[in-house]
Length: 156
Ligand code: FES
Image 1: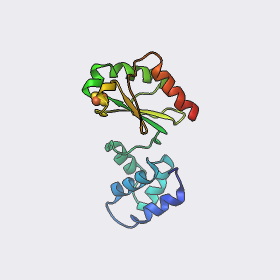
Image 2: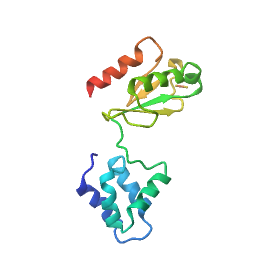
Image 3: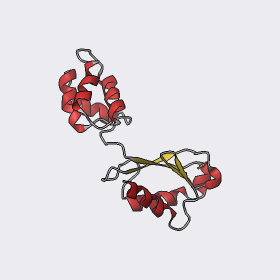
């Protein structure tokens, strides 16, 4: 769900006044919003009586936590053996060229991010990727990746 201060206070209510619950509380916040919004950090600090610097320390230490909002369309690009052999690297380069973001970073319009994954179980279609529930294969066919991204951009 989008960031909502009231919801944040509700999540933090369970942890108020308890010691050593910062990680648990951050999990709770990320579970609700999909990330830890920057604007939530001073509130978390105030509610749990921990310094802001400690919260940033925990977020930076654990890869699991992120302060970046999730993209609307996460592109799960297969790096299983069949896809790798059939050119997953080239697909990745093309995607990075079109979207202009590295792996794991959301595009400035909030629409896309690229995540490498293991075999999607569609090896006969290698190289393949998944966007939401939609599977796309044989991605190195001329113009295919460009038209898929365009389709999602138009959807917004
Ligand atoms: S290796 Fe990519 S779908 Fe199996």
